[in-house]
Image (cartoon, rainbow, N blue to C red; front, side, top):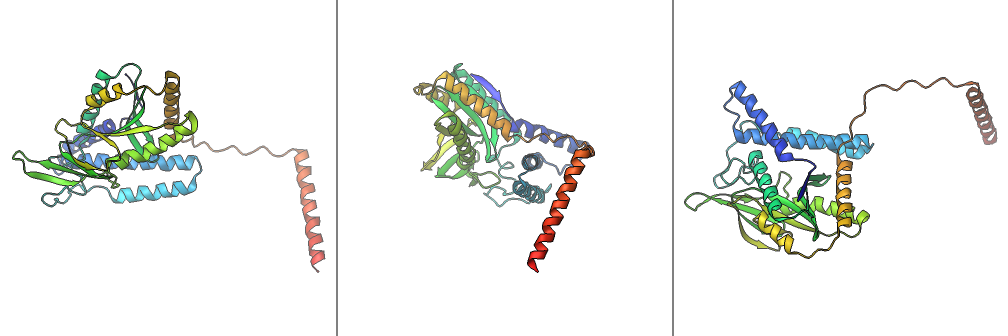
Length: 327
């Protein structure tokens, strides 16, 4: 299995969190706990994404999108996590910090997310052959897809969650529950990102946009959507009307995909891989041009000056005729 890495946000978040911890250690500030630094790192990533979207809209002269991006950045900065967040109510996840500070870690730390993603790549690679391609970190304007698996059975979009909890869902509403060592409920709450999107919605929005793009250029493309629970202690509770396939093991998922009949050939897979990479390059922010000022245009020659003089004379005659007719 070949791996193509377009972006790796957990690694970026881990780097930012580590840098913040080092800064806190140098300052000797005990108030900066690991949960707080992780929340600040995630918030900084959101601000960077919004800034990139705003700059891309400006480069493309989409001024309404630029204005929305500028307002979104302002809202994000106002909602920055506090260094001393208030305590959550007993039995509920802290709404500011997600569940990162809770035992269940519904929103895991960057370290845990990075470990889960590495384990997914290793497990998939042990089962899938060389005719499979794993694309990591595809992102469009509706969000990010953790993994895109492209193989003979088709295209698979995967959203991963690394949490030691029991997960249940009803349609697109997801909840998690964690238990202590005695089997009692420790934390429970909705499983969603900071925009309130459940894993199925968080995966479905960018997947639908990518599916539309690929179908418009590479023929009809259908995409299997999978939410993968990567933590070894993750369990699947009661799920009704699930809008995605839910798996608790990357290796079992790979075996199921390997048993599916082939529907697309090598030529079409190569075409889809090229289109995915091209769309990713288009979605990336345009590099700002240099701030060199434009040189003033050369002065017009004799012919240009004569043509402008005749145009001014013709305009004056037209205006005079119009005023005479109105009298």
